[in-house]
Length: 466
Image (cartoon, rainbow, N blue to C red; front, top):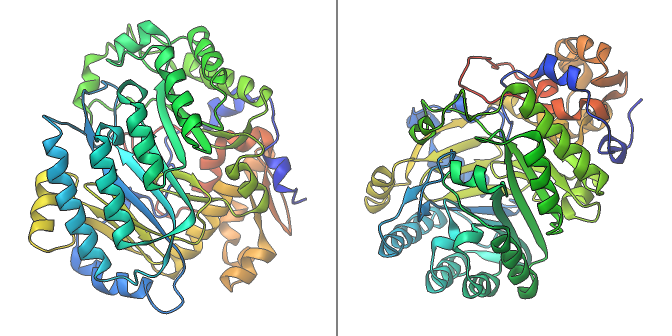
């Protein structure tokens, strides 16, 4: 019954009735347990011991994340932890503190561990000038052993991008870029306070290609004010003309109680309804798979020869707080405000406010606000959910060998709870394992929920599954 993983990613027609039935709020499972369960009881985290445990002899590779929160203006839909900067001198001060945090962390680490992945997120990393980007590169390379084949990615805003910034990023090692497009319709752009003519997107892609970037991802959002299925279809066509290697097609989460700027939107007159949002997702899925992109899972699509698609076929795809990744087995160390670190048995998240983060760093303290230590059961469930989210299947024999348990026996109750999903054609199963079907792939989060002992469907805690 267990099918090859290539089959799980095959193009298919969406079953909209099935999605309507199961589209409830659910975690995105960029981690397990999800960040909603982190604790502020820092004593229970024992941070120094957690880092020491992660750096014992034989420790594997490292993935680095740097949060650069600055933007020139606020996009009204934005849910990121960002700051509208007064000037680029704010960035110089931030980089000073960022280097302090790196020094505090590396003092507790084995700095000879190979760094196989670096990601610059935000905010808008290209708010930094070429000189500031070069300085950030020095901070990274002076404190860590970055491998020659490191997967080095950066998030970019085409509205603020220059050829000089692209070259500076290339010099410090960046080879992958994710450009924020969101929507190409002028009316939608004005409604969300993000004016971005398509020519800027074309220019950004051209600069990146010319500079030798090997992979370009485009971010889109559906469900924004004034979007319609027809207009979003035109956006998909515009983006396909850019020939990206990957696409991320996110559902807009309207959470005005958490993001005050979203109160600007008229929910009755501007925001599309649930059926229109579903139609937009269906259009994106249909056109992208017809164009040859593989449905990696959730909202990610990639060309068949892209490393994400290759990793999925090989069963080595990974998922972390930046989404899908090929850096399986790497410990994640995050720097900057709100960033999250992840090791085999711990999560820790930095302070979300600039002042709190700076105060801790300048006092010589790790700027951690909350986190979680994982027990053995958490780790087992994390492995199961990881393989579901990345492979769309569970091979009981393989997992039993890797986790040193009888997987089917240990998770007998969870497997039994999947009967309705199997009856609805979301999964197929037998004694060897279970497989999420092509029609069930948009509902990966729903399948994963059955292995999540602490899941709560409390409104406002999680976005809709589709």
